[in-house]
Length: 614
Image (cartoon, rainbow, N blue to C red; front, side):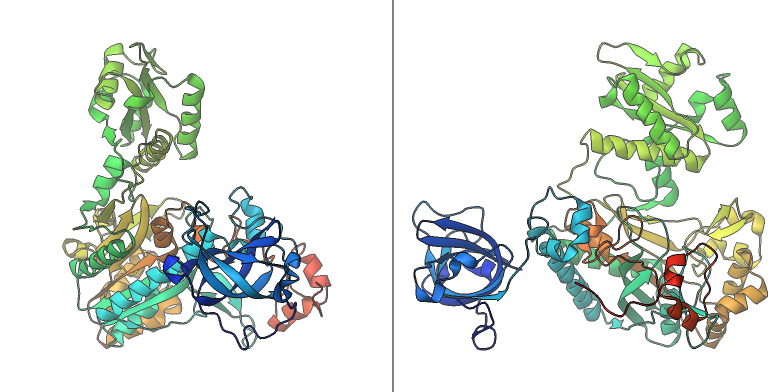
């Protein structure tokens, strides 16, 4: 057994993947290549688990044979090539946990292709900390879990490409180095060496570019687009991500939703084996009122209730003050939670406050029928009972009430609803629930900025009945305007979002004006786009699906990092490559950049490294 590359690879090619061998391969001569996943000495024989991307198969080696005299040198994660004969395992020795558990390979020749240092953790050990696995991501990718997820991601993208190609879409790449534009998250900026003092931006999405393709007559475009957003991260968000980006000409809202509904049906049929059927629709306001958010998880109940009528005329200052300011009083009943302790309820109060609420009112009835409340001294007993009865019709359970602005009350109660869905195991993990959320507001008011902002983005069309509000600049009615926008929601995740676009230059100019852009600002940021709209723009609409989020759902994992080959941490760092990193002064000078005092001093004072030491 040679430790240097011999006839394998150059002369003897791999004939099978390790995980593909079954009982029907018995008697066949095979050549396998992969990693040593485990090694066991049994008397005169050595057994190794040979692992490749397809799975594991057991190899039997006899060190007494000249061709395998150095079998004792094999160690974990060595890369080896094996030639041998597939045979059925002896009776009673099969391994039902392995797909290849009925067979083993009796080796006739083995070659070490590459030795390996002792790894910092065992591959497929789920107890290893995520920090360590991210540091050695290339080792974690060898695990069955990540390998399966990444291959599934490939299959999903291939399915999408096939579907859209059959629907007459053309795949077109758009630039990564592009122009910085306002709205949305912060841009990642890239300094230009050739044009010092000027910057490119990495695209948050190919929004204007795909609309320009419609103006260019491409009719139907798609792209698996890389996008970048400099924003705070969550479990289902990364600073760089991929999206299934598409745009269609000569369509309205129902047309593009129909295409994407068929796409969802094809994906779920292939990867879940289920027929989705028609996807229900719900307005934004209905979703907010019933579930407290615009991407509700419909796999369990616990709907919110309006308590305005029950709260009027109580003399309770908290209720009276909120109602006087046009706020709302909403509640959530959890009939399974009547026996929660005061300490547990205090944690719920903290959760509501974290979501923005000033406080949380609770009423509960335990298993013995005893009613207690945080406001029993401030509210008449009949009012407390009326609220509790509405939220918990059985008379048993926990009632939670938030009095605040509409958005804050919804956010707090939505957070509590999801908490109980998880804690009480109310979520049916065996099924997926889809929903189209429609009739979004066109605008939302930015209190801090003192102006109206686009709820979706500045290129979204108003609904037909609200066109004149925008066209005539009726700013007092902007809050009434609804958008031709739509989100595709699955299991509480927004997996796709889009809108019908504004295709008239006068309406687009009115939108920029409504958002507070001066004529000069609009020309500076979007002059090229505004000019393009004047040369004949078809009605068009688009949508983008999150590839990472879609794959996360189909892989039944709750962390988006699991389905990305080389992800970032919650602080947007790459632990494996140690990025972002400092750069040398020479590089900064070349770009015409000077750092602020105290920023990157070590980098600015250090020369660029000339070599990399092992």
